[in-house]
Amino acid sequence: MSQRLLYAAFISAASLISACSSLPPISERINSADQLAKSSGFRKQLITTDAFNLVSYQKISSTSDGVLVIYIEGDGSAWKSGSLPSDDPTPTNPLALGLAVQDKRPAVAYLSRPCQFTGMPSKGCSEAVWTDARFSPAVINSNNQAIDILKKQYQAKDLILVGYSGGATVASLLAAQRNDIRELITVAGNLDTEAWVKYFGLNPLTGSLNPADKVKQLSAIKQIHFIGAKDQVIPIEITQGYLKKLTKPNQAQLIEIKDYGHVCCWQQNWPALLNRIQQ
Image (cartoon, rainbow, N blue to C red; front, side, top):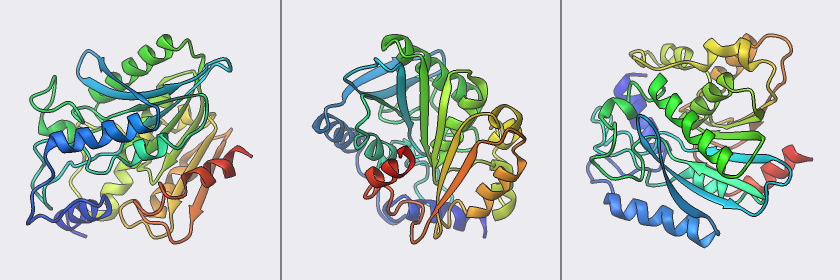
């Protein structure tokens, strides 16, 4: 598949509008996320890090067990069309937020990706941040700083990271750097960006890090990776290849869901999937 066609697949999979139309206004996308969070009892916080400002939504009733669950958003509206980057990556459908608001655990937070929900211009933002350099050291360090702030704010001891799509890539890279990760959960995640690039014949993600290069650090972490059998954006072969690279002790589990794609039907059935892995 050509690079243009793949980006078109991303746009289709993320339920974005076609290239002949314009994306919804940024204010509309931000307001929609704000309303979803507020209606679910989440409060909004802007977290300032060295490189970027990150938007967080949080619902914390207790951290008595010392665990904070953090959801990390996908790539969002990174592209206007198959070859034209967006002016603002704020998602029209913040799927990770849609998952987070359904999580009934006592301490749940959501983190946007850099430049999402902040409006432009915004600190540190350029097209590279949501295209080729979307998994750069600066991006990962920014998320690390934001997580440290949240952890201190709520006096948490351990973290459960949940990442959707490109947010799963970020979550995996974060888990490889930290020593406080109790569990890593990914949904339709890109866990080997180099293999993904080769699979589709794309140009390399210049300046980005690859979770598959961190398998030594990741192998000892408990991991659950959800993938849809019909996902054409992140084929199951990418996840299977990543799992084969893990060394001992290997604590990773792959859960393939029949009839699911890259977007459908994670939000609709997230409570049932959470219940399945918590039993």
